Length: 307
Image (tube, rainbow, N blue to C red; front, side):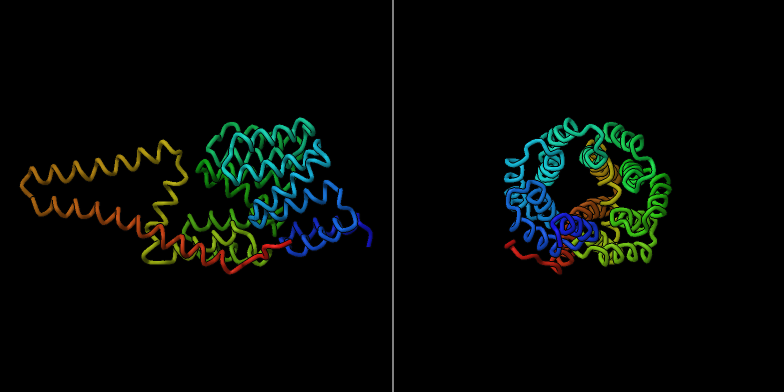
């Protein structure tokens, strides 16, 4: 089996979520060609998918020393910075990749994802439109439009583009997760769970799918269900709007309590105060319970520390 074939096979395994097998192939390739920048860079990409950020960064530094002008390597560094919440550096790494390859659709997608995650919707849409100009019929373009409309709260358009993406590739992992989230918001828990399980079957290490599955469980849970609904709505707002909602709720409860107290209903005022306190405690308690639920799903899959 020649090296080109092995490398293609590694990428096929990556696309199907078979990261341990892909890593083994890349190790074999590096044993034969230790100075291949692309092999080191692809290994870094795999390690990053497994959230082994330090190991990925180590491999990527080797790759960039060997081939500092390779756009793919800069895009992998953008992913590392993104996971480290270094937004400026992530966007700068995307720009470096685009300077070397101005029509790289994968980098447009990555940059739009980074911008969407930071609520910079207008800028993100610009890069999604660039994707559409270059590759209008691709699954990545359809998914990016779907994700954009989901992030801005237009679930109807998000559903249209999600269905279009699934028509292109019914097993596309990100699209299945997004469809699951749309079903979950609509209250169709069974369909949401189906898409979560399908994605986990396709890629057992998919953190997005495991997170969706944990959300399905939280939505089913009597104690966590109400908290999940409220948290989902608030988390999709812009940061300023989130603050406004919380302040408004606090002021409303206090105002109502004072009005009731002034009218002479002292016990009712106390009930309102206790109700607000109960909501706060409920929120505090629900968060660690949900986090434990999410961690439980994540911990079903462990990875070797060596490679």
